[in-house]
Length: 198
Image 1 (cartoon, one colour):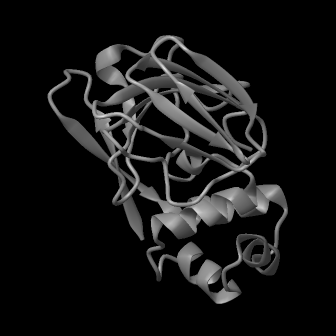
Image 2 (image 1 turned 90 degrees about the vertical axis):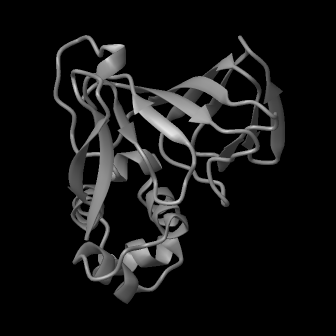
């Protein structure tokens, strides 16, 4: 199973396409975390056979299933859709790598040159009334968000916080969380996640 990830070319003339083996990425992350197929299936509340089929590229999982798997692996969802990054210290505006989830209208652009540091920065654009997903996700680490334009509702556990332009929030990303755009205009925010993935 091959997933497409849009990446702007250095000349800024539209996205190039990078192919990523999502199943292989899930398998590698599961092995790094030391989970058996049965352990991951139990933690994600899906069948062992489904995990096996996803890892072998037989089945293309829904985004909701990927979110469950990411939470079970305690990694950010985007890290399962993105191959390792290599690069200089600087990421130019016209050379950001964009990660898109199938069926999701939200745009996530990687602002960090690689995923080897202690954190990763994302530029996230949410269309009006869009949300980061139908179910809360959680992963190891800490997350911070700064709203650049528009408004953002952040649900962390049972707490809902509305952020306006210039507002910032930091929370324990092990708590289930969702981002929502409550307004009628696009929301742009910078999100920092630490660690970027394990």
